[in-house]
Image 1: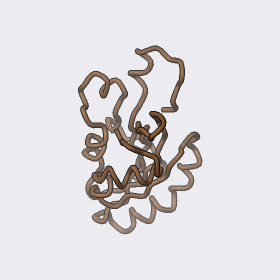
Image 2 (image 1 turned 180 degrees about the vertical axis):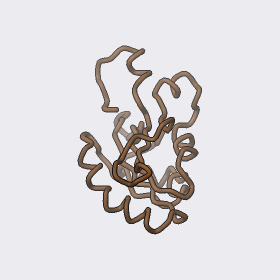
Image 3 (image 1 turned 90 degrees about the vertical axis):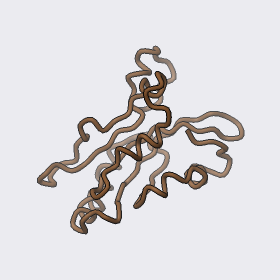
Length: 145
């Protein structure tokens, strides 16, 4: 998911834009959730017109998860891409599940290099407000995705 300065268009299309992670059924390991990813090519080819909305649709309504989001945004000076680590912790998730995810968050977070921002989100409304997301990225951000 890291930004690669020099790669072919075909390689760029295979790059992941969003990936969700979750616990195994026995809560022993954190794994990639099957089918819960967005590729850069899906966005470039128009299969996904709004990656943020597609990401929000992928989030489980009553279960926790982690996500890596390769966000594209603009500042007053330039266009940027930065990795965001998101801890999805919805209000409707069971308390035990919330505790397991909260206690394992630091372990998975330390495995990822290049993450510029870390967000804990409890409701989709927090993600739907793009102006709030832009503030989290910095005061000079003018557009998010």
